[in-house]
Length: 226
Image (cartoon, rainbow, N blue to C red; front, side):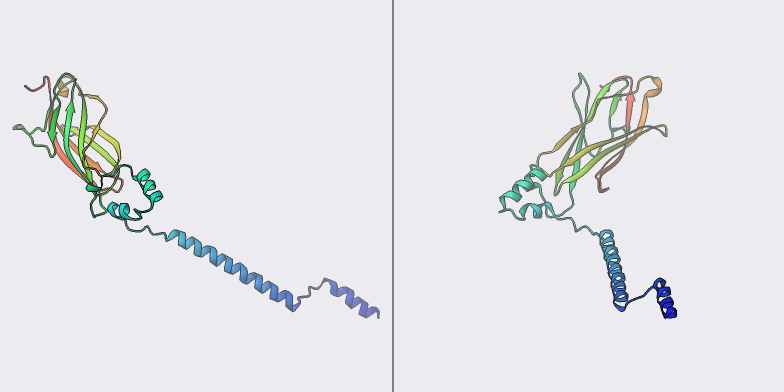
């Protein structure tokens, strides 16, 4: 009897795995694996997000045009879009038509783009130490152009003397041309500032599409040309 009791008392430290307990453990492991697989699938879906193709603006405007609430929402989002300037393609078109040099007490100097150099090879001439502003005129058609940027790099005798970058903004298509005026600047002055300069001007949007890439030369002189 004591031997039996001893055997029973000694058996309390031995784990007893009931068949039902084993089954529950297996089910828990299976559920855990399924949860982990589900999380991995969600991660894969997040990583494999593919943006749809860009839709022409005209198609966007025509879609759901009978829905008043959607029409108002599109007007708020897109602003005043001239439908006659909207094309069938999804790519925006930007055409820089002219550069205007505005200086105090002088008539505006309007230079068509692309520049046509004079007999000396210069697109224009500036007076040293003079204040001036640049104004660009351009047209936008087909679609909205996002993040239009202006960059201008200037060299003198092979040395870079200026590198300007300006974010012009986002513009919707319209028949009337846009104008953008830069901040006032002053040309360098003095004997060593005069002479020939070379420059490169570019207009690029957020997608990296270049609408103008032009190289030209200009001159800084002691006096304005007559």
